[in-house]
Length: 315
Image (cartoon, rainbow, N blue to C red):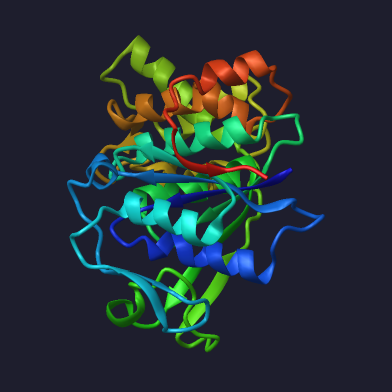
């Protein structure tokens, strides 16, 4: 067993390399985790991957020093080339994978992250330790990393590297100072979140109403009554005020639509079905609902995940 790292890559390779460098120098391989860097999956845009968008200034500095070994001037190389060369020169172990994705589309990011997580940590098996670096990448990509981590529990650590002055120090590929006010490695604790089926039940009940009559709006009392009459768990002893405040108010704009400020609710015709498709998908069921999956099923769910192997050095 070893550690697989998931990370977003933009035009600053140091956002990926600095954290890996610190982990390798400070922790190394251990009996607890195995290889500290068994592999890295980098999610990036097609523009960055192909070099249409070139990397910012990058400097391979000595560990915990500003002494520079090699410089890549801005625009001379693309970020994947710099990252690959850094692995060859400094990391010298593991496998570097590239996954191209629309980094500004949350759904695409979530699907890619979820499939990569499932491929390397198969439900019901020992699998790999998975850690995620949230330093670089776009907000949608990092949101996908967070959501997959908290809901699946398969990503055990989230970490990022802090740099006090990006313009001055963001070019360095390795940690450059032991002064935490200039550079620091920080963790975000992952607490697995239980999947609450009640929100899905609310959307599904509104979906049934929409199928019966697309123009119909329900009151909160009517909706709660329908859920109770069907014996849906979690709603039997709930009062109308709690249902309104804890479910309908917070779900407004998240799958259901409210008519003006009235107590009239129905399924959002655009967002609601999209959310239900995600919740019902085999991929989400495999990640978030637990259980053991046969290898054949994992292979089917991740068959369209395209990982390009950029570099590999196996021990």
